[in-house]
Length: 106
Image (cartoon, rainbow, N blue to C red; front, side, top):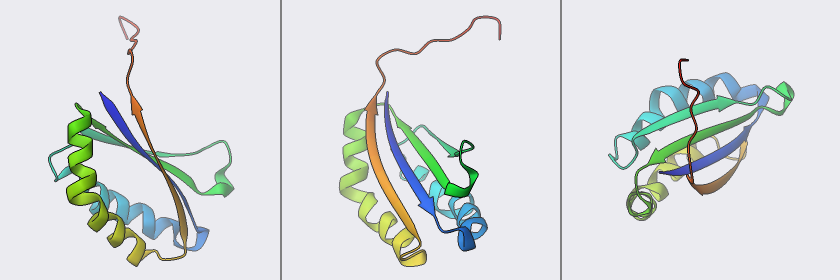
């Protein structure tokens, strides 16, 4: 499994609007590409004033991730940038899962 992670810091004055848009529009549109198996949306709690969030999109193969980047990411990132211009910072990373661990019985 591969994880495409986007870390976003958003301006406080549009935080609620941005969260709603991410949940209702952006993340579902990324998943509609059919190249990811799921997504997780996190808010950082260690420093609430930072307005920092992470979205993780999981995919089965690096090929699916590359297809997303080649065919869809430019358009979807532009939608985000146009809507929230100069009110956010975003950093993207890619991770490869080496091993997962689970606690049995929970």
